[in-house]
Image 1: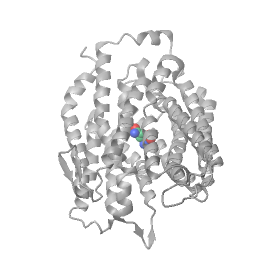
Image 2: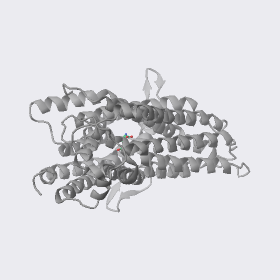
Image 3: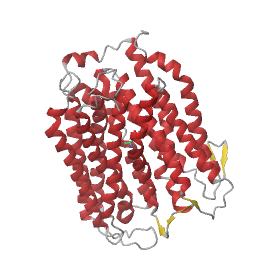
Image 4: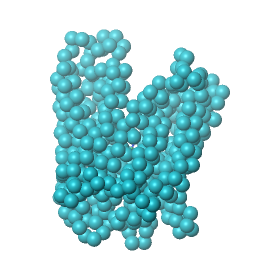
Length: 467
Ligand code: GLN
């Protein structure tokens, strides 16, 4: 850690983001269960879930643009927070009016049950969540960067600390909201989970509102995240050659990062099927629920973030700290390695045999090393490279790659072997789990090597003195 510590504003942003992510991941943990319990078939529920997780990362483009052009980060975060609180409240109302769907046969919902209000309220809730996240997510990340001088070496560390906040929230949200899991006989019980999520984001927004003036200042003591000045608005149309090159670097890296999240996000789909069907989850006689595996990466992030910061710090002292772009390639490399481990574990495995849970645990451990190398450092990189008056829009573009990934992740997961014949783009046959995992080994491995080869070019584009 840098000797001079970090500005106090970082900890306000940490707390605000932590409570918001608590709300986001808490809702996500029970959302499909709620839909399946009373409103939709599993297939429709998965589809809605896919659209939702995709769209929440698309709206940051809009939220980033509006902040840079009109509102500034502060107001955008507050509007976003309130919209999300409203969204969660509508989900609470949806689950308050829902009727048990009295299943006639397995998976078929009794058509006599009228849940139109519950569906309408739920869709309204999702709309506000998608919109609210768009205003909140890119702007809070942009503000972390604004606390520091553009070239401050502490930025990578700062974003890693901030990222711990993300994951403390991501760990606690499902644990708390998950307590209020309902089922098909008692779907109204879910409403308490949504209410918890609503309260969390409201508390987050209120804390931010009350403390922003005190703590959110840059290195010279000027308030950050306020409305853009006239000069900044005008500057939007006049990008220098250097600024254009910096923006190009962000686009290129964001394109590579799509491969990272598309493979990483298998956690919620194919890796969960694998945990369910092919993993022995017994620990001293107790069988761990399948969904618990999904909190492993978040817990690992919280545990490993300080270690990673220390590693970068030590390497930095010896003059060997990899560049931010190289860290993106290293992140992709770790992802490939994690899948290589599990591909090896399931080689020639009989489909009826269950493997030890160490394989998945090992995969998530390695993936987290990759995530810490790529995700917070990526935010830091975007913050360093963005022209000041486009900083939030650029953050929105960065998150857009996650939107694309989330949609791609679902497609790739359909290759999970289930006995039917499957092939990747009609070229490679996927006949076993080993083949399936190798798709991700190759995909992220090739992306890692390609990006590593491009580092010198990208570094040249990033330098300030080549215009
Ligand atoms: N887990 C992180 C978060 O929720 C990652 C987001 C992303 O960039 N895909 O903020």
